[in-house]
Image (cartoon, rainbow, N blue to C red; front, side, top):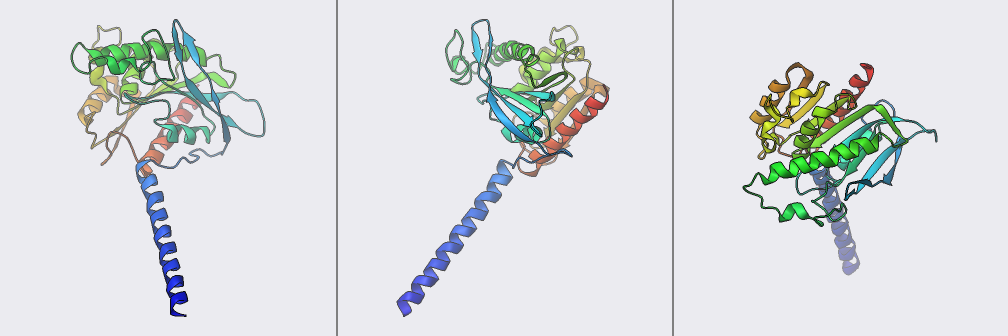
Length: 284
């Protein structure tokens, strides 16, 4: 009898331990990764579709997140996402899922050089073979990524689900610097850009009036998101960029956030991005 009761107690203890560990795991995932949610007034389902973009000798891997509602064919406002260094198309998938669930299509891709999925004449992972220090190596990589992004912009215009009058660029870290540099020639076809903790030190000429990459040449709204505890992109750098953009830039600072937003701030950032796109749409 005592043995049976002991086994029952042990079973309950094991169950409680598993339950507690599950709760802790979920909370940690929410804290450090975030959970995608609809951030708009209407909720959509969405489908994912692999779409490659080819130009010159380069073949870029990408995925589209396409909203669906009532089985109707529609054209949607569309965000093109540019990932950061040593990363890939999945790096901010939580935010992109939130946007897709809110009726905004997204296209996210691997820059050539960081992964095995995007290929070209220099081979896979070729960025990782370039010295990380000296010889302006990262600046060279950003300029290569600008070429990739320009090709993607032209390709995305032709996607059947894209409202080409409502196209936006979203970039994080090195991808943010790439977006800022690429946007200078896209005032006519990119409605707005969103920069998350952009590593502008990689493109020093972006805030130089005589440069081909002078960000002042982009004439549409800019949303700039930055954490106060960013160990890679100092808050002062984004503040300087915001001042350089002047009145066309909305600058939002998240207290205590590191280089990559986490937990509730990932949701808050997605809401800001959605509202930015919504307000830009109404300015047509």
